[in-house]
Length: 318
Image 1 (cartoon, rainbow, N blue to C red):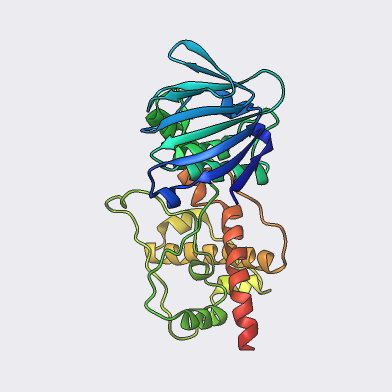
Image 2: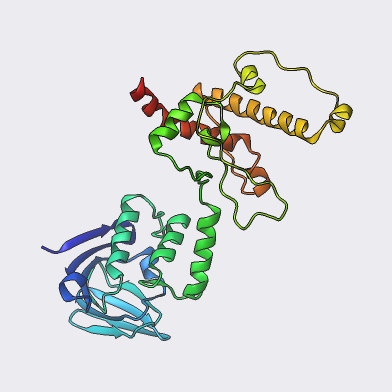
């Protein structure tokens, strides 16, 4: 029994008769049933594939090389490789056209993707894929079939640009820890206020570190951590009185660095309490590097996701 792929948004049903697995990649043959609309009717190209259309029922109109070809039942037309062409319905009612492509290439993956987009409601009412779905389609399967203009290279560049700008934040662990996951989780349970471990951080910055810039070191994974003044304040201790800014500039650099670290720990401890209370975290949509490194909403989100992964392990150990 032939495999069937329904794509009602394109007005078509694809019935695969001979697949690449059966022919060793020599050809793929399918019956296309219905009246094409939307994306499938636009001028497109199949890279390196010869396409033969044999009309079984109805009438097919093919526009190719500046000419209009009307193919009726019992007739066929051959489209050379890399030739822009359009396929339009002719006459009344649905038709049936047997399409053969040599070699198979990735045409079956393209048809499968059409079916997936249809099931995921990624076609609009005019029969065209939504922007992100269309960009991913071009980036993944552009060689199997793409619009005649602009060039495939330009289409791929635009598609990749769109996918990068609309990609959500990805959080990665900044540390290479030579320890088993159980050991890391045990340390996290004893030191929940460490933001560098609980919150992996903001998206990794591209490029090399500038000369003279600070290099962050991973925290030690041994021994319980002393309770810092910032951690004590986060759990109810009174805040230390603010220092005079003029005097603060004259303090040693080491003391100022310790105060800055305590302030960071205080902010992250507060974010940790909010995440544990299951309050909704703000979302950061800014892609600027300066904002990404300081955005409290992004930090809250990372802490909440880390806690979700840690809590099942903590419950299993208690």
